[in-house]
Length: 232
Image 1 (cartoon, rainbow, N blue to C red):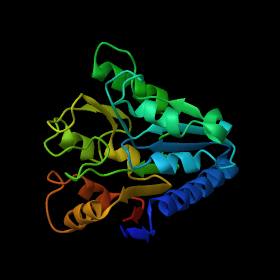
Image 2 (tube, rainbow, N blue to C red):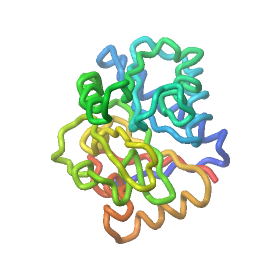
Image 3 (cartoon, one colour):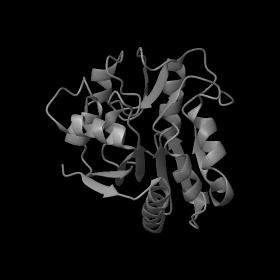
Image 4 (tube, rainbow, N blue to C red):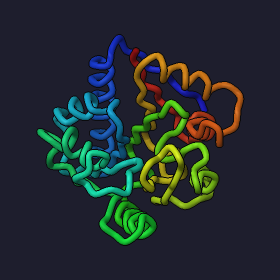
C-alpha cells in the first residue's frame, strides 16, 4: 500500500492542516451515513491538533470519538488518554460529540476490554478516521515490541475489537484496538513531530521484522493508504 507524506513548517501548521483534513473526512461521512467515527491516540503530540479540531464547525453531535489505545487507569489519572481527550478535544464545538471510553472500572483489564469491544462494535467497522502516533521504539497503538499479545494484535485475522497488552515499556496494562480494527479506516493517519520521529520512521520503512518495530505492520499491510503528517 502506498503511503503519503504531508510535511508542514511547524507543529502549529501541522495541527491546523490535520484538523482541516479530519474535519473534511468526518463531514463527508456524516453527509453519506448520518454519523461519523474517530479514533485518536494519546501522548503530548496531539494536543495542538485536538484543540484545533475542537473548533471545527461540523455536526459533532453525530460524531463518535474513541481511543486507539488506553492505559488501564481511572480517567482522573494524569496518565489517562481519556482525560487527555476530554481536556483538549471534547471542548468548545466538539463538546457535543459522543465519547466511547476503553477504560471501565472492572476487576481486570480483560473485563474492560470485553466491555469496550461490545460498546464500540457499531463504530469500528470500519472507523471513518484513525489517528495513530508512534513511539521512539517503533510502537503504535499499544503494539509494543515484546508485547505479551503482539502477534495476536497484529494478525489481520484477529477480530475487530479491544484487547489487552502488557510490555516492559508500557507501564500499566494496556487496552488497544486490534490491527484489524484500525487498518481499513476511511482516513488512516500517522501523526508525528520532530526529526527524531522522522528518523524512527525511516528505520521502520527499512527492512526488518514487524515484531521489532510494530509500526511496520501499518506501513506494510494496512488496507487503507497511510497518510503521514509530520513537522520538524
